[in-house]
Image 1 (spheres, rainbow, N blue to C red):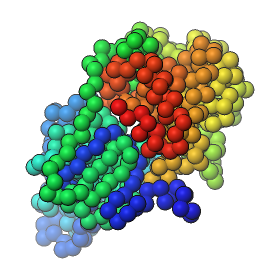
Image 2 (image 1 turned 90 degrees about the vertical axis):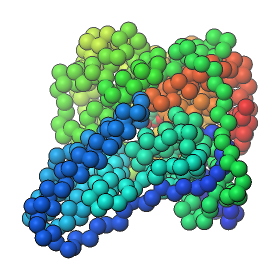
Image 3 (image 1 turned 30 degrees about the horizontal axis):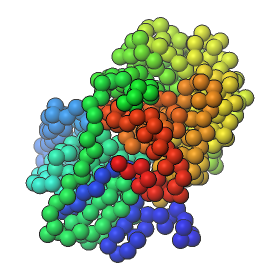
Length: 555
Ligand SMILES: C=C(OP(=O)(O)O)C(=O)O
Ligand SMILES: [Mg+2]
């Protein structure tokens, strides 16, 4: 690997300074609190003297852990509350409890060891399923460790109670860790792993806490205090006796719920959703509509294709909070990181470059047509103003093929995602055959930089501030202006309040994001004029790296 290679991007600049991926802006410094590593494997011996009594300890421990998480959820809101409730439900799952009880009774294991083994069984099954299912392994292990700690009477792993404002240092944060954070006590977040789309990144941005992720070498750094720069993506050892520095969160104007710059240039602010809970959270946060409904999220566990009636009901449940509002439903994006058992092709050497997204529909058009029929039905049932778009479109011909099928299904507006550089380069021609486009910056970055979006080692390349990516986005913004048709962004880039201004300045017409970022992005747009946004876009476009692009647009 050359010194300019991807793997070197996160390495130590000096013994006292490290760099990673800046995911939430602001600078702060103060004492370090380390998030405990997962518990070590509990011993299988000694065997309990009374296996029945030992087995009977599991259910109450699970109830205590679930109750604690539910209590935390009561004081949280939005996305944080959803995460805590989901984690509580996993802790209370009777399948986990009864399997652990069985292991105590039949194999004479101590309860903590039995929970460990039962949870590992679930985790391995999820890991084998791959993709988004595999990402849930982290959640299962988090619940496992909370249960084990309860059974052993020790402090649970994860974020300890913070006595005073601190910089949190972790390998990565579990969803329940990030959801329970008290923003008043967390000066900054730094993780050794994770990427721009990790839970840490999403929550840090929502809470306005500076954060840097994928900082390689972080856990080996011997520091009592750290200075964190969430703009430059650097972490430096600081003087522990120096006063704490709190990030100056930019003073944002109140958001009135209409996505627009201060001089009235409309940039609609939408929510990304995949479930009824997401949709409610987005509506509660003030989303003007839905910019991306990931329909495949409804079927990650399904072994067979759901019927048209089942799909219609599932989509209606998600769209109902948006009666009378614009929603963009994406057809199934199966394959690569989101395999669907009933659609995903045989094993491929490079799944991200294989038959995924719309490509699946070329072989199985009847599955697409059934989904379009269900979406048309859900539009009627929910009263939402529905448009449909296809994922992973590479050419004008593909876009035209999809639009014909959407219109044949009686759906008024057909669009496509721009996630492949070839599509970005042909944005104007694509807009000639569809009604709108929406940019998936997560995949567009992955394919532009040839960098797996799930791999921490190349996370720096997938930074949405990469000027190379911004130049492609400019082509899409120019195409929108030339054709007068909408071009939105629904990848994580849209959730960064400062990058949102750059995107508006490049000519993108809507921004769609997870619920926690909606108000912050809306307020950020409301605090700038269109001319400000255009000046920021111009400044970012002429830089040579993400740090310089951020620096050029700093207030
Ligand atoms: C929004 C996107 O789609 P997904 O993350 O579902 O692949 C994207 O690629 O940016
Ligand atoms: Mg994508």
